[in-house]
Image 1 (cartoon, rainbow, N blue to C red):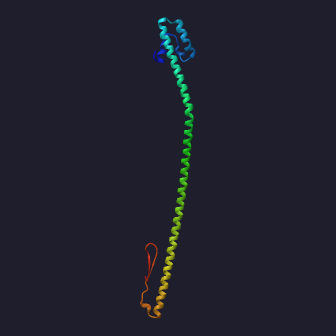
Image 2 (image 1 turned 45 degrees about the vertical axis):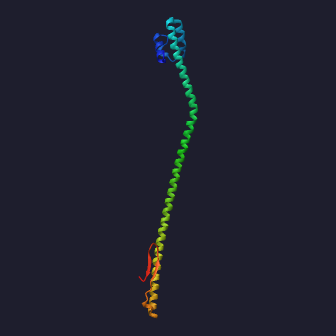
Image 3 (image 1 turned 120 degrees about the horizontal axis):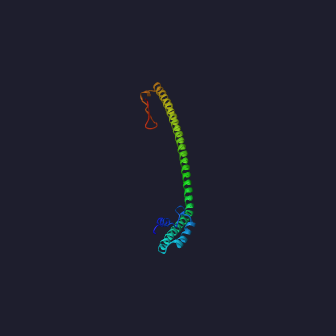
Amino acid sequence: MSTEKLAREFLVGEGYMLADIQDDKVSLAHVPLLITHCTPASMLHKGVQAVMTLLEHEVASKSAETLAAAVMRRVNPLTDLMEHSAEVVQYMAMDTRKAVMVMYSTWEEFRDKMQKVADATKEELMRVVEETREEIHKAVRGAKDTLADGDGWADIDVVMTMPLSEGLHLTWPP
């Protein structure tokens, strides 16, 4: 008998093993007694071989179960550790994402405030430059009028150039 299934079929077919209690150990223990007392000598070898096949299969199954249990005892802590590590990495990734979002929003706020300051400063500088230009125009007109009234210097044009920002120049007279 080469397989456990064939051995069971043989013993059930010969009547040495009940079909409904095949997995019962008591039943398997009584089969050799039945075979030795009730089997003719020509069938005795075949019956014993069938019982031995069943016993080998049962021992192999128990050994495989024991080995699987031993492997699981060793693997379980590793899987627990890997699961814990995965959770820690996931929490770290979530915290890192939160930190990046906070930093990004902080930099956006900082950029917006800096832009507002730059715009306000630019407007203030433009206003001051315009006021200064008007004052210079008034001063030059007053000086020109004074020169024209006084000693004949009115024929000389006073040209004054003042550099402003970004390529703008203030030139007098306009």
